[in-house]
Image (cartoon, rainbow, N blue to C red; front, top):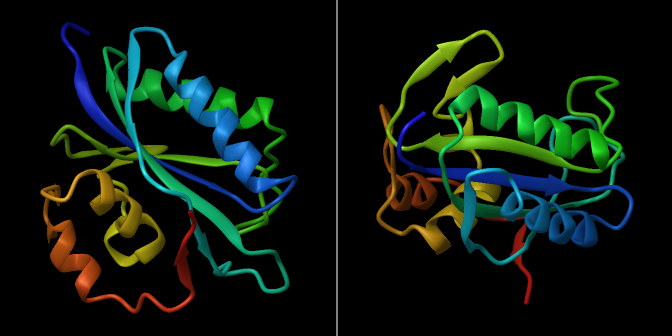
Length: 162
């Protein structure tokens, strides 16, 4: 790939010292080939969705400038998850680390295993709040401005950590 694009990555963890998992993963993102970590949101605590009886999540969003293509970036994120002990035992299972590509410039992509923008990001306050913190003018192709989308969601259960 020639040139660099802006990519936003969601980070989430709720097992094995989640805040430490997020901090370590951010360092690893900054060390990816042909990639620079530009900005990182605050950490946010959110209630777990889906599977009951699991700890709260710690979430954040990172902005990258990368020369990696979207599939290469996804492969790199999956490798980081694997190094953190991520196991995919069932849908919405607790996890040591979850990394998702939210936006990759303005690319719309519907390939097997990779959908851009992330298909449910516009419904999730725990994604939009940290995203808006570091990119208040961002928008999601096909959905609109992130600020407007966040304003329409219920923020209860979401806490910005200092």
